[in-house]
Structures are given as C-alpha cells and as structure tokens.
Length: 250
Image 1 (cartoon, rainbow, N blue to C red):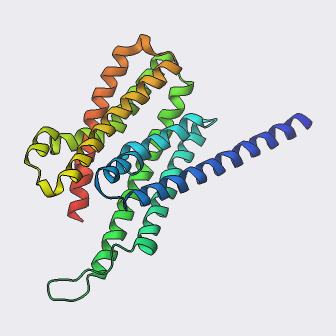
Image 2: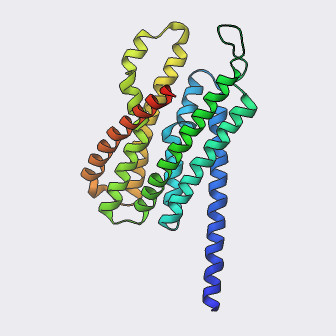
C-alpha cells in the first residue's frame, strides 16, 4: 500500500507538470502569433512563419506529444495545447486588436457584424483543425520517442511532411521565382517576406527531421524517412488546399 501511495503521488505530480507545461506553451503560442500580426514588412512575415504557421503550431503539438509519458497524455496534451492557443489567439483578436471592427459596407453601414462572423467562423474552423491535428501530432511525437527504429522513422517522416505541407502548398500556389519577378515595387518588402516565410516553413521541418534522426539514431532508415516525408508532405499540401477552399466558402 505504501508503494502504491508513492506511485500515485508521482503520477499526480507528473500530470500537474504536464498541465502546467501545456498551459504555458499555449499562452506563449497564442500570444506570439497575435503579436506577429502587428509587425509589418519582411520581419513580420518571418515572424508569422516562425510563430503563426502550421509548422510552428504543429511542431509545438508534436513536441508536447514527444515529451509526454504515455500515448494517452501525448494525445490529450497536444490537443489541449492547440485548442487553448487557438481560443487565446482569437480572444485577443476579438478584444485587443479588434481588427474585425471599424469597416463599412458599400452603403456606408457598419461592417462589424460581418467582421464578428468572420472571427467566429475562423475560430470554429481552427478549433476543428486543432481537434483533428492534435491527436495525430501528439501520437506521432510519442511514437518517435518510444517506438522501434522502423516505427519511429515512419512517424518522424510523417511529421516532417505534415509540418512542411503548408509551405509546399504556398510554393505551388505562388512559386517564389514568379512572385518576385512580377511584384509591385511598392510591395516588394512584403513579397520578399512572404517568400522567405515560405522557405522557412519548408526548410525548418527538414532541420527538425535531421535533429531527431540524429537523437534517435534513425539514419539507417533514411529511405523510410524520405519516402514517408514526401508522401506525407503531398498529403499535407492537399489538406491545406482543402482547408483554404473551406475557409473561402464560409
């Protein structure tokens, strides 16, 4: 009975530590994404890529899952992180920046109701995305740390592809070499920032793959890593396309 009591206390402390870590990470993630929106030019676009992109939020969920003690906690922690960060971000948009307000329609009337509707729709859309992506990323993070080498390689390749999908979709939608040549000189800094942001969201997942492949000694499984990353990246890019279509249709 005494050993069971010690174990129960340890488990309780571990859960409290995870809750605190998830809450802190969610606050940081939501706040940084909100602050990045207010920065203009090249720096602003780079900050958005680093703090307010599918890569940034997906990586945070994945790392929470990798850190978690069990698969169940990995799923719960990653999902809670994304949901909480999403709610915080849109709460700040609603109450602090209030960029949904102040607009006018063609007839001169207020567009605030349409702005509020847009905020509500995007909040719901990203909450659904969080509920879907959180368990996947959290579980993959746990598998990378605890699985056999071949299984970890599959999970790591899948994560790399998922995290880079938004960048690949953006590049296919607007190839940098075309965008830079036709850009309006007045918006050149903004365009350069967008291109740099695209490259960041493609390059950094590869850096993450190389780091974790080294940490978990998965370089013998390079063919599996690369094949899974390419397949997952294509799937992720397609999902980002469908998400964009859904957002525009609402």
